[in-house]
Figure 1 (cartoon, helix red, strand yellow):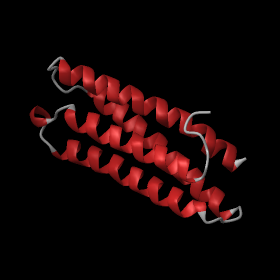
Figure 2 (tube, rainbow, N blue to C red):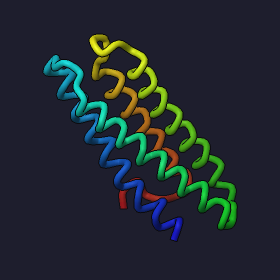
Figure 3 (cartoon, rainbow, N blue to C red):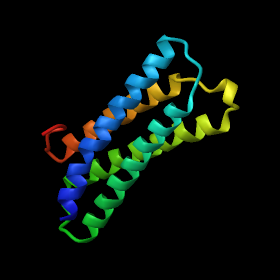
Length: 127
């Protein structure tokens, strides 16, 4: 059950990541002021990633460990760290200095790292 929840939640994480990148790119290209909607989307993305990692760790303690998990665990820890770094950097900036750029770049990197982590265990990224 934990594996199904962990695996299924990745689709929500990927979807939210795409939404964050799209909204941030729209704001960046349109030179729009940073808004609350961006903060909420980024928080939802990071929170869904947190939940996915938590479910993965819970599954790890209830199943058999195999060597491919080392790459998967490493990539997921890296993705989680990057996602949190982006949110911390944005929160520490004064409101007038916040931009969409870190969300575009950071979220694209997180999505790439997640994809590599999923591929490390021989699973398709979407499917």
